Length: 438
Image (tube, rainbow, N blue to C red; front, side):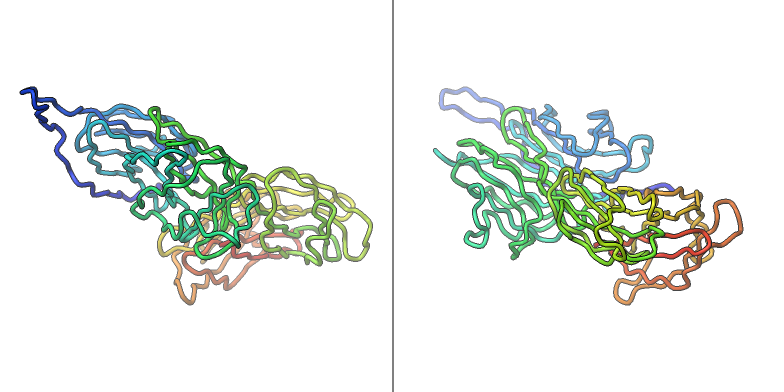
């Protein structure tokens, strides 16, 4: 089905671009007619790189997620930027802008593909003075809410300090720069008014008299965020500073007779996970970890040892499958971005023991064809009530046949929420587990 990206217009006050200035010696100078713009793509689920045009002329192509370009020169004046998903030229974000001569700008695209935001930010700043630097926070993290940002000495107790910048709203008109003392500082982000860390970074050396945009964005997590640090310098350099945090949940899709216990890096972390049961998300550090699985009926007997790599600022599902004698694990990335307006999103995962592919019907209409085992790439957006939710019938057939293996007569989904529906067990006794992921 074709995606349509709604046009988003940004009203920018038009200014005089050619300014005559009398130097006092009878000489009139003319201001520059050139501006500088960089392109930043922080839309995590476009499915392909973007093509950006300026006044319908090519400007940047192959702009992948987390791409940060340097400044490029354009004529000062009134322009229209458009961003297309590669291969789908009718899907466009359009932004009207007005740029001044000798000024630098950052054109940021962010949010989910169903409700993208595109804005241009004026990078003009005043000298912060000796031993200081300037910082501005842009909240580009859809679904996270207002955020506080802390820049502290490494390891500082957040309970003893106030935020460096507080209460930054998603897609808000950006606030003025904040001036802070230079240093090798640890950057942390929390929900506004909370001390719960949803982003953590190694220390970074912020330079004297420099200015930075801290762009808080989502890679798809329900709770965690990442940061793009944009230097406001002559070139317009920037870098992605990946979070030290990640999240995972465990789903028991096995055919082991008793519930499962999971040891995480040697410590019992999750216990008594029933068949078709799923845990809540577990916060941990990004990187490689070791899970060891036991059946509650046979404590001390290891059924599986598994060492997944958990990615920064990402949510993942670890699905345990198979019988006790050959238990295995599958790691799936989770997309917990907000669904489109008025919709609930539900991802269906075929975690069955022996059904190679299933067809998924919603209210008797086929919505997914031949969903393969160990796949969670497919998700649906369904119009739902935002208060009481809406009930849907889900049915699951052997792919390409009329053989129905499982019917769920009333699955209630609430608009703005994201869910995963895990189908588990053998074909003769399928079960379903539903989780709300945001």
